[in-house]
Length: 108
Image (cartoon, rainbow, N blue to C red; front, side, top):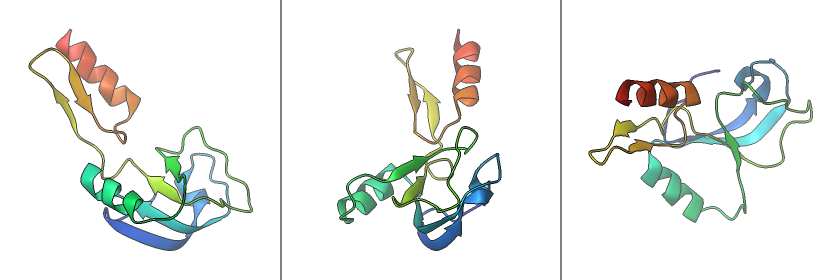
């Protein structure tokens, strides 16, 4: 997956660079939130009903025609994961499942 600057919106992004299969057309717009608050503000200021949430791209096949909805990449700005004092964990949407599993195994 290509690296993007968190807190930035991009135009005409080739989606094949964001999938493990290396296929897919172009996204007219793509956003990379810098934080949870940044994402909330961005969504509050957009008229689009539902973005396309994008993680690591390992289970994603994208049409050569691209996506109509705006992709929002979660894996570069929403990476917080913490063990909580009550035994729970705080995990943001961009944290890979394997990282969550490792933390849980360490806490057990």
